[in-house]
Length: 187
Image (cartoon, rainbow, N blue to C red; front, side):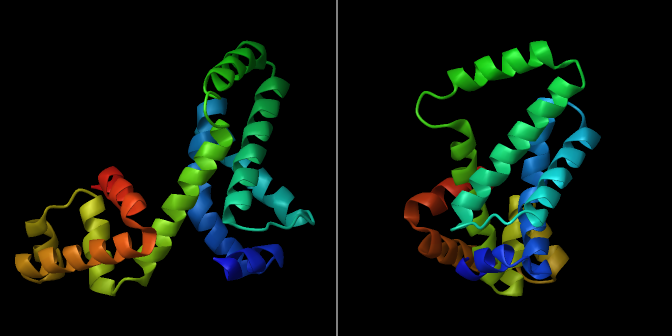
């Protein structure tokens, strides 16, 4: 991940493609909650990526990048809603909701931490063998052992073994607690 941040800071296209792949869907969902229009949400996120690309900002690590991205999308979304004229009620309602949610942790930071864990999870999934990765991803999509076996042309026992090995590897790399939480979320 250190090289990833370094490459993002140096504006290398490969790193920015990876950044886009990992963050774009989550940022669009986040913006959509504020602007209530999928096309507008996508425009907001794209604007934020462009502004970061055009700026000289440097990020220390993935959590700081994640927090920056979510805060930028949040700010841009609220500004857009306000600028379009239908924002006053929504802005006040959203602001009140955000204040209520700040009991333990700033919601943007909480989302950033969650996104960082999910990004680590997918980076570890990318380290698995091709067959293990396919088994895990298909399982996350809700496919049953029998369906996976048929699609990959392997036995059901092979599916179970590959799944068990993959989960053990992910738990080892993430740590027992984070691994268990992610598998509960995705299983």
